[in-house]
Image 1 (cartoon, rainbow, N blue to C red):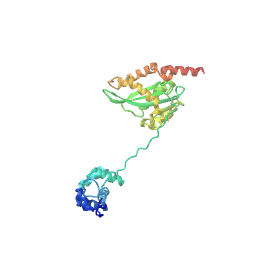
Image 2 (image 1 turned 30 degrees about the vertical axis):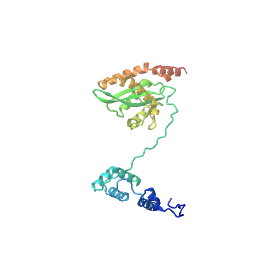
Image 3 (image 1 turned 180 degrees about the horizontal axis):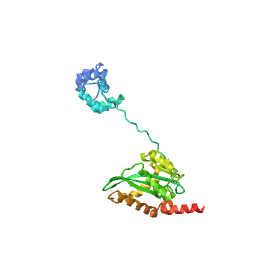
Image 4 (image 1 turned 120 degrees about the vertical axis):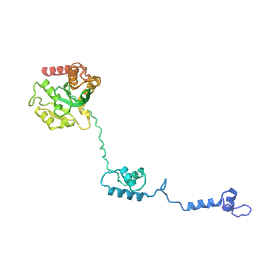
Length: 297
């Protein structure tokens, strides 16, 4: 507008005249022009601090170098800075340590590929594979106790069950001993030759004593994959039934009462529990039918 010419005089109106007509102070106009010609340098937002990022980073590095320990995180760095009268905020210390890779090292979780588990762990005949595992329950007098069990992968029959206070490698073998005596007739060298035992990587099952006992009986160790309970799904499904039908619905005074209840449940389960994949037969009925077919063949 200031460069426009008056139609009567042919002269430019000028800035002073235009600003006077518009009621705007000339100082404001010239100040804005000055700022536009010389843009201000970007500054750190927020309240002004005593230390710049570079200066504070030097202080952080000095704290880390002087610390007698390694792996200290940003919170302890911030606390040590405060002890040295260097006042700043924890988020700022966290930002600087992260940007400069000074954070305490952390264990990175390794991504585990999802397994399809589209195969089958169910066998076609009894006594080909047994699965064993442990679960826990509580008694009023003895507190928490461990329940070991073993189950046939074909018939879902509970071949052994045992409850103890201390879950040792010796006690973990008891369900297998029960099953060997009942289904193989004797407990001795190579008594259960060819039988596979599916178990997880618990310390009891990976112990030398447990593995040596399996070899003594002629059994083959068949450990499940790590972090994949589906590989031992037969015993896991039995434990669900055991909990829903017994452990979660009854109180037990002591370990002796629990042992008696487990033995009674094992007999009742094998005799009367119906398995859908076995055409709604009980585990014992399925075993008798399959063994009869073997003898007939």
